[in-house]
Length: 95
Image 1 (cartoon, rainbow, N blue to C red):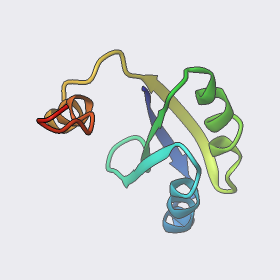
Image 2: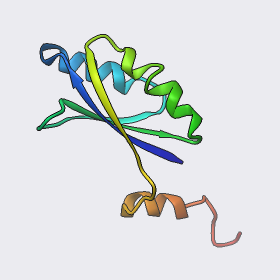
Image 3: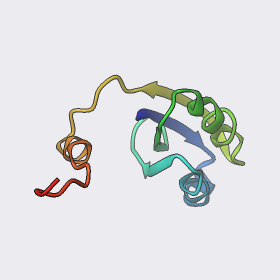
Image 4: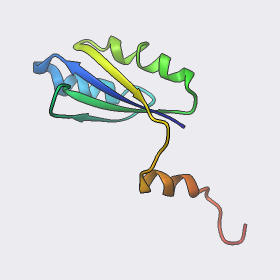
């Protein structure tokens, strides 16, 4: 699984609509409104690296009201939530 963290500058008066539109893009797992230099942060999770290009410059950057983005690719996951999911393969004790 490839994870990209995308910081987004958006038209301030349209942040809720922009966030909702981005959240509906396949591959986007979450969108947060945030403080600081950027207005929104989107988590993109896809099986293959090549899909990042389809989602971020191909769709997310084209959402009306998105002014600029900064994308960061994650190397490893250290979240307990994500690690638990990785080890939960759906196997039962009898398997």
